[in-house]
Amino acid sequence: MALLEVRGLMRRFEGVTAVAAMDLDVTEGELLSIIGPNGAGKTTLFNLISGIDRADAGTVRFADRDVTRASPERLARLGLARTFQHGRVFANLSVRDNLLIGAHTRLHRARPAVPVLGPALELLLALIRPGQVQAEETNLRAEAETLVALFGDRLLPRLDQPAYSLSYANRRRLEIGRALMLRPRLLLMDEPTAGMNESETAEMQQVVAGLKARGQTIVLIEHKLDMVMRLSDRVIAMDDGRRIAEGPPQTVRNDPAVVEAYLGHHALGRTEAGA
Image 1 (cartoon, one colour):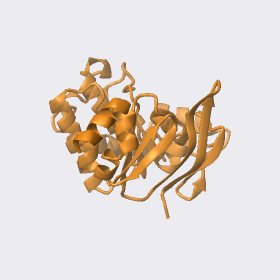
Image 2 (cartoon, rainbow, N blue to C red):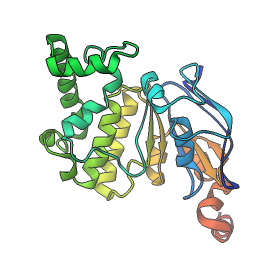
Image 3 (cartoon, rainbow, N blue to C red):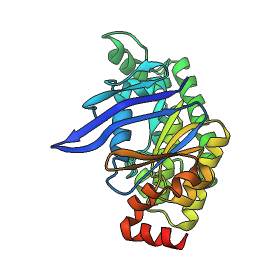
């Protein structure tokens, strides 16, 4: 059974169809990449899956539940995390606190699930800080330090520094680390190497490869096709909101419809003439 099932998903904006009758399945442990030119509808598809936007038609099932209309908060509790095309961090918080925010759905002692009175109890526990709350925080802090080791020495020496002091690449790493603190069953990554130079891209590729080796289920949007070819189990190509190809990485890369979408009719003609 697929971890994520999307059927007939559609989204229109003032007559423009951004996502058109999209179907996809993602199985546990798979790394699925979604490629396509700018404006193909890739990020809109992520927004629909992650609850940030609402579909005009179609369904989304995650972990055997219908989550078509679910909020991002509910999806996070179910184990779905995402990163964004333009990295988003809490600039005035420390690196460590940004990471701890990612574990918000896993809090038990500091965030009691009590209807109506829950927020008041949470505030009281934050003021009193009983031993169980302190222990939970200590464990999460230790986990955050272990997690940032995925990025070598890029973040570990900077745990207590404000996020605004980080380089662009380190902010992207921090955003991924925060998503991983959720312990997600499914991680949606929207162009994690956008704006990175060659060496930074190579480092990020190693990070994603390491996550895949650990069994993390990932859906990746990425424009750098060399990275897609190396990491993906399967690739879906989109153009004008539609799926135009699907299959193993090399098969999709050489699909005439994909070549045309990226390079245009004239480039496709040259490619075919030279074949």
